[in-house]
Image (cartoon, rainbow, N blue to C red; front, side):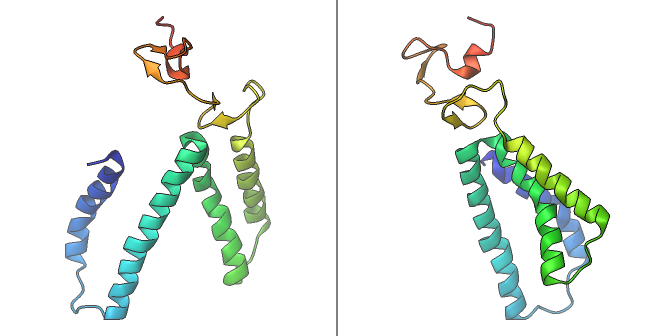
Length: 148
């Protein structure tokens, strides 16, 4: 099983006893079952596919920043859709979350300029043959280790 499948399996096993203890006395309507299926299959599958695409596009370190923005989106939707009050503390938190997310996704001063891929790999990563690359340049993962 792929590594991304284990957390879901572990979660299902952990929640199974609680599901048995709170099992409904009657079968929910088809509308409720359809809504659950839509949330569980369509929305979750779409979210995983989009997140994996994001990881491929910007790298794992930058892709995780999207999880920091979730509370800010929840606050904005709560204020706009549900009419919740925006307190000064929540507003300040909103600004801090968005500011931190912007800072976390910026390229550092020490990073070389040029097309940045993933977690700081610049340009094309040469095809590795053993420890050395095809064109004689070490890939970043090997170059950073002092085993030459």
